[in-house]
Length: 127
Image 1 (tube, rainbow, N blue to C red):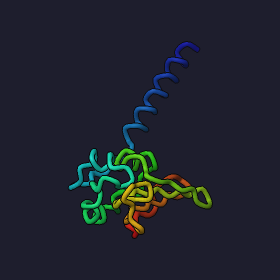
Image 2 (cartoon, rainbow, N blue to C red):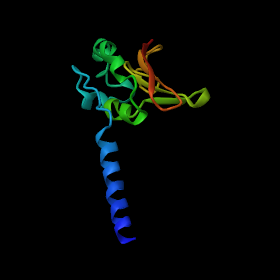
Image 3 (cartoon, rainbow, N blue to C red):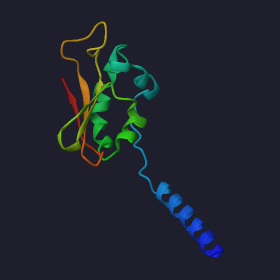
Image 4 (cartoon, one colour):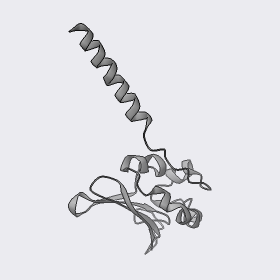
């Protein structure tokens, strides 16, 4: 019985190592200072505005990522919205959004739609 416990502990540890080691690598979106981008909550400081074209060209690299992976890459969303059938939307304002002093009437934003499995299904730049 003692050997069985040792063996099961070793196997469990091995399984945990293998499952975490086989995780999907996060994409490397280039041409954007992500630390500054993440610090520009709601796009209020205008740091995200010059990145619109760069982000638009690379937005499809975000598809298939989990909600937590998206947060690791882009930071906490400016706004999130639950949707029907356990879907969810994340919004990142690329121009001064509704919470800013100099908010634009129709700011440009990145919209990510997550399916019921929590994976990014759609990435769109909207105005």
